[in-house]
Image (tube, rainbow, N blue to C red):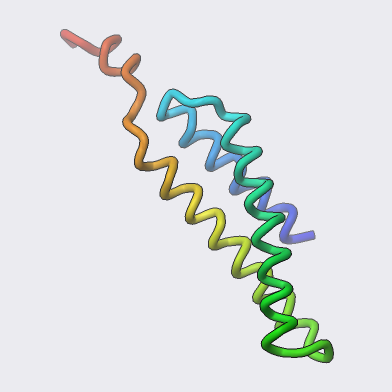
Length: 94
């Protein structure tokens, strides 16, 4: 449950950042959710390979760590885009 709340909060953050860059909010939220799910599954597989079947808490924690890593990766990619030109044009001469 806490993971879903974290994903909602992080989606809002990514959406705000995408809007400030002049990009579509929904596209980047979809990228975040897709990346989150895929990397969490990969993280659970890696955790299973490291800890074995008997240590479920460690497996889930590795999966969540991978999922948060996908958030930071997507945020890094998105932050490299230039800011929206509309703000500069509207504020010209003020």
